[in-house]
Image (cartoon, rainbow, N blue to C red):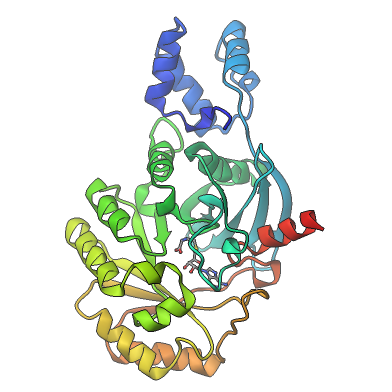
Length: 345
Ligand code: SAH
């Protein structure tokens, strides 16, 4: 693994400068250039002396990803395939909302959670991203599109809680007021549901929002579509979520993809409502985005509306995910999976 200087916190940059015999505040200058101005080379840091810039270039190489393809949809959604320095690919999706720009970023190249509807998992896990690589997704898109991203969702390729330390470091980097200074309230982490990590995350008190990919009202159905459910009974997951809520007083979002004939009946909706009773919860319904290799279909419009209506009748707070960029393979991992195939052939 290459050393990764974009992962260094402002404190670590100050120490680096001290060790190099420089004034520590110069560490803050480098950090600001990297994390606020999105410098991709030390040559841009003209407020540092030439000798120091050369030393930094030699000793602290920056490995920014390269934008390999951009696909744009009419609704303003753009999907980026980023090539990392070692040839691995990840994707991120830029979405335009009334409130601003939101970026969906990846936490790993591939994924080992094995959800049966998801394209990211098809080739397994290649490797986890570093904190700096996660930040670089944000900065690369901001720099090339010349805009400011106001919200980040960690819902691209990978399971963020399977890359926990890098996730925490990424949150520290992106929130640092000396750098990008992005509000933690505007960041959402989505997990397929690893109870120990959910509890740890609650204790950490990061202040970011949490979304749980639930996708089923009971273990039997969940096991059919999510491998993680084989080791984690739903009650254990819900206990962890309740712990999270007690600690943070935060509303949790449950994501629920609707798959034709699998988890979309009235009974399924009633059982889901029962499960969530008494929780400060919100259900985000997403009709499954069919991935050829997975063989799941989306329900009819009438079925989707009916499922939501049943939840509402039972007093569950429910919204439907605005589907963006469908014609550009914006569903999780699809662009990357296709690029991988092209490379294989
Ligand atoms: N591993 C994390 C984050 C990445 S997946 C998690 O599981 O939450 C982000 C979201 O996209 C999850 O809710 C996931 O279940 C959903 N997703 C994956 N494949 C999908 C598909 N084909 N159609 C709709 N949603 C999908």
